[in-house]
Image 1 (cartoon, rainbow, N blue to C red):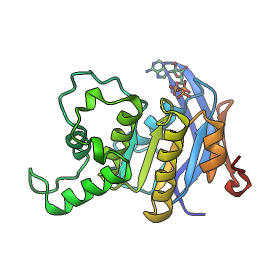
Image 2 (image 1 turned 120 degrees about the vertical axis):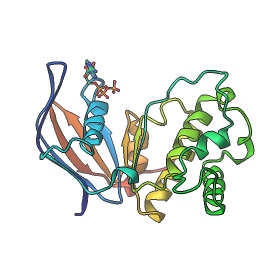
Image 3 (image 1 turned 135 degrees about the vertical axis):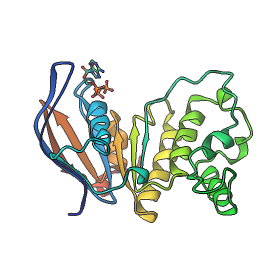
Image 4 (image 1 turned 90 degrees about the vertical axis):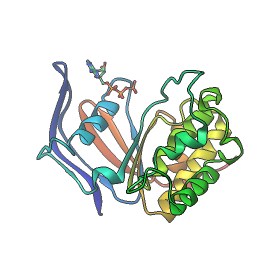
Length: 222
Ligand SMILES: Nc1ncnc2c1ncn2[C@@H]1O[C@H](COP(=O)(O)OP(=O)(O)OP(=O)(O)O)[C@@H](O)[C@H]1O
């Protein structure tokens, strides 16, 4: 199994509270892995720590991906109703803008494609502040996708969505894993989404982690 993240014997504490002890696991490349565990077990802290090792390496952790190929979509952030950018401009902030301060033709094409894929095309000119929770969540995801990540980390990105919107977003993410060969880490508490979409589940409990292979084909649609 190729792994994009390899954690070996990691101890992790926050403010004197031990969250993990001798934590060891791998995250398979080009798969969708759900990270699960009870509230407060340390899911978000673990992800933030893994990302911090781009700057401050830890020899218990190996990341087979570059920082600029990694995107983290945090839990829904509060945005002011008056947030001034349109959905399109906000999503466009994710473009790499390597050389020019303006968007190249290639970048405009990518932006258009991402807005289309995330079903934001028809509302792209609306102010983001006026968008619904689900639309905002799709805009955060779209912004991350504009950076064409190899590793996409989603922290409860579907939590504020209704059932149909969850499936739309997860179908898109599943398709990206299959066609764009990206690896997705998805922190979630939603058993239905785990059954439907997870290739693997990293279950965190009692300061340890267990990686389970999931069988999506056993999922039955009613
Ligand atoms: N900066 C901090 N200072 C003090 N305690 C913290 C800090 N960050 C996290 N914690 C504590 O560490 C524990 C793990 O928090 P974390 O947010 O990682 O859990 P989680 O598994 O993501 O939870 P949830 O499912 O509720 O989002 C919690 O008890 C939390 O209160």
